[in-house]
Image (cartoon, rainbow, N blue to C red; front, top):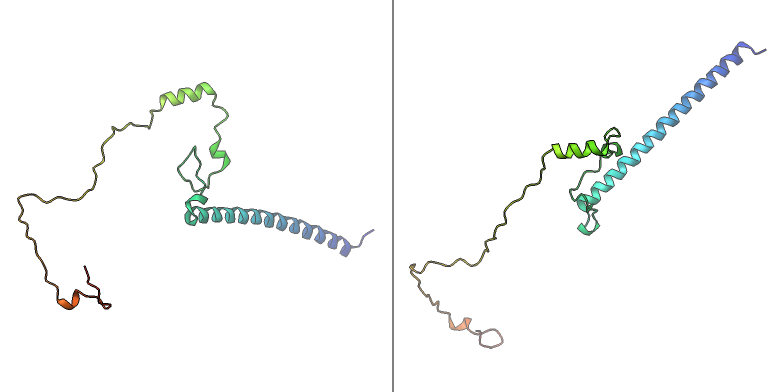
Length: 139
């Protein structure tokens, strides 16, 4: 038969074992959350600061998202069948609108009106400014 102290020690060992298992589980969850946050941080850094050729843009959805969505949000609800989905799409008005094409105005050189006065001013240059240091004539 066990003494009272042995029984207390066994109970304390069981409690410590449970506490250790709980702490290991918390550590595992914290480690997973840290790795997920680190991955999101690296993706955001790459998206913001990387070369455009290194950025990933989904061709089906060119709008860049923050990447925080979960798989549950992307899935459709299982109680909707194909007929209900078609009926829903028919009931919801389309958000696509067509816009008439327009011509782009070119930004060219602005021309002054013919009725504005024009004056040609010839600025005289000193003789020492007409030659460079080597003695050649400047144009």
